[in-house]
Length: 367
Image 1 (tube, rainbow, N blue to C red):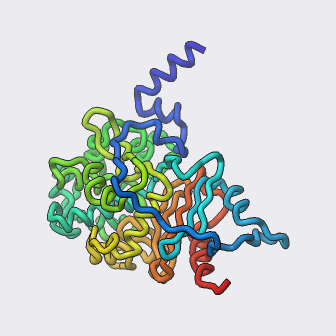
Image 2 (cartoon, rainbow, N blue to C red):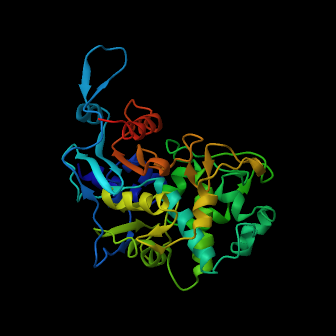
Image 3 (cartoon, rainbow, N blue to C red):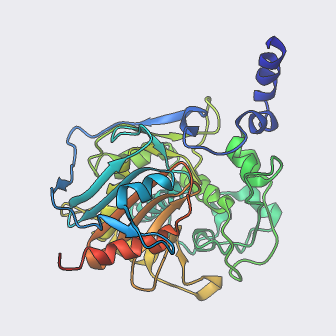
């Protein structure tokens, strides 16, 4: 037993060791990494609630004739939190597996969408000139790796041509190195390209970590978490404290590709901001132009019709969503004024994007 404990300690001291010990991303991961704290707002925004929510009480599952209770479908598919919000009113809110409204849940890749919002704020504030700037303006060490033609736009829409192994299962893959490593700046400096930018979409987390480093360099005297607090966490009147995981305790940088830790209701407020075109209770938090650019299909420069500026586009009907690896979602349907948040231990056996679209349409029906 002593040998096992000592071996764990030794292994934990290195990236490969942490992969062996932790094995794979899971819903308690916010406890594993150092982080910077986000402080709840002194004034806390709370959605309205209703006793007669707009959601289907039962669902037909697969080929079975018998209908299944809505709660059970969610629980059977490893959901820990689920919210349906329409017109600022919570139609449905339920927690499973001992989770509660105050339970912390890691965002995983939903943080990519948050990072994108902060890039938009930095452009609004003049810290970054435009998405057309080459990224070597902020990360000059990548010039020697051939990144001269890679723009911020390429990185935002995942068309940079980055040579990056997205596997979390491979301890030697880039995603695992970024996730478990303790020197993200060094990891970024070693990135290479496998094709010219602007030719092809490929979803890889390295792009968002590049955005994080661009943001940190542009801000100069503030951390990404401090800027997040200033531009979003406080103005959006977050109900709870949160945090953003960093690569190491001393002078660490934020894991902008993955790791914001918060509660389901506060994640919903990110969706509400974009549903209202960047406004929060009448105040413009991020420009409407940025919201539009972030969520409108653009297939130029290698872009695709289902992804834009770190947001997924489930249909061509104007809806969009943030998505994380274990089935963490913030779905927004502006036409129907609907926000859906789903947090889970894993994806279960549901195509969540189709599920959200159906639920959003259901709220339009006469009941």
